[in-house]
Every structure is written in structure tokens, then in C-alpha cells.
Image (cartoon, rainbow, N blue to C red; front, side, top):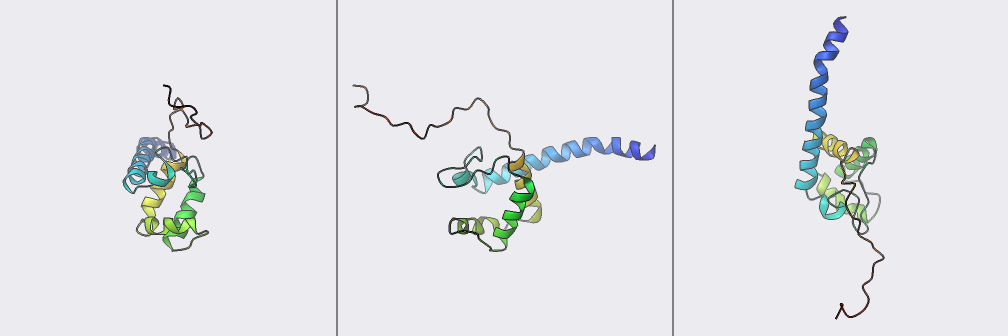
Length: 122
């Protein structure tokens, strides 16, 4: 009975905590400039990978490697300076945010195949 009572007392803390972790991760993502390469919705830009909805474990593992100065490709060298000063807590918050990122379902996608033809409509 005591275990149940303790569990019930911690449910609001756990819910608040995960919301706060998400908010902190979101602030880090936008504050550290991650959106410059990975986009505002973390789906990637140009040749930079999508981070949205990836496993927290995988994201955390990669960030820890970058923080240690280990890269897997020429392009991943870019990540080392960004990850170098991240704390363990910040890595947890970023990876939690990216795994659980809320995306706008109604957002129009940019069609990469679209090519305007003609003289501009004159």
C-alpha cells in the first residue's frame, strides 16, 4: 500500500519533469543553432540528416561521440564544436526533445522537384 501511495505522489512530478525536459531541449535546439542545419522541425536541410523522432539512445550516443571529438564522416566534423560544451544533462534534454518533437501535421512540404517555367507570368 505504501508503494502505491508513493507512486501516486510522484506521478505529477514525472509528468512535469518530462514536460520541462522537452522545453529545455527545445530551448537548447533553437538556442544552440541546431535549426541552421537540421531545420526548424528537425527533419534536416540539404545534406544534413533528419533528427526528428529518432531514438533518444541513438541521438545521445552520437552527441557523446561528437563531444569526445570522434567523427564518423567529413560532414560530421561540423558537429564537434557544437557538442564540445554540452553537459550530460543538456544531451539528455536535446535527445528527449528530438525523439518527442511535436510537428505540425498541416504544414506544407517544400517540393524539391518544383521548377518554375516561363517568364514569370507576364
